[in-house]
Image (cartoon, rainbow, N blue to C red; front, side):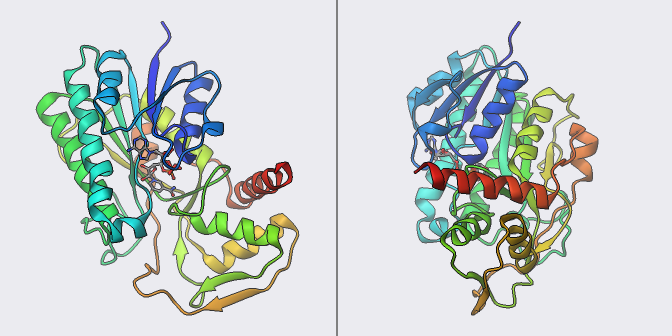
Length: 319
Ligand SMILES: NC(=O)c1ccc[n+]([C@@H]2O[C@H](COP(=O)([O-])OP(=O)(O)OC[C@H]3O[C@@H](n4cnc5c(N)ncnc54)[C@H](O)[C@@H]3O)[C@@H](O)[C@H]2O)c1
């Protein structure tokens, strides 16, 4: 029988790749998205689409009555700076929206396994020394990170108390085709657009701050792996959580150089004053994802950046 998957945020960057990957693995895919930042053109043609807010009774009804096997919950308010300026809006979507879906799962006759898109970049805070292990203490620096951590606690609770099947994927900095500049790896989109404009690339401070850049196709594959895996018993917060990154740190200066090599340009790199509060080092450990999900990243950074640049260039040529 065809397995059924629901993807929230499936018109967005990561969710649309997750939907594509599930379709490629033979799932029938339904998408919920309110199109607040997602785009209709990202929706796969063969997916069923509901233009709904995850906080709405309509979205809850789709979850409750849809007989889904898998629920990939990717919809979110993803802008860390916006969460700082408007934490109520962030929590309304990222905490209450998630709870609305979890309550609907609890009420469903056929309950899906919930795969939650969390963050490895904004969860652990600045006081731990990377590479970040799943069991590291959590002390998020932003309302966005606090909301993601809250949602994770709710997932662990629903697993414990109500026997809901859950998996948490804590993404590092995700880049790739369809990304926009506001996500946690927004610098890749910003640099691609700068290169296409023929303008200098700006880095803040000395540009030696590092991130763990993971390709969106690998993140989609992690969702499929989480859909198919036999999971360990659920109990506490970290039991069913895996970091999804590469385990490799890359500085902003190296990122700029690698992108320029892919684009065949040699534009100047300008330094602007360091941004106060910016995290200097962020990289995650990924051994647990290999052990729990049988997942490993496959895309090397240079090849993934080349793919991403090509997508930005082709989109520019098409408009
Ligand atoms: N991009 C990254 O580097 C990164 C890193 C860590 C975690 N994540 C998480 O991955 C998930 C996907 O992020 P993304 O980068 O693809 O962002 P995105 O903005 O492209 O996708 C989010 C989607 O959710 C939809 N959405 C927002 N609010 C909604 C609501 N109330 N109801 C229904 N739909 C709503 C948007 O329209 C959009 O299509 C998010 O949960 C995000 O927190 C992303």
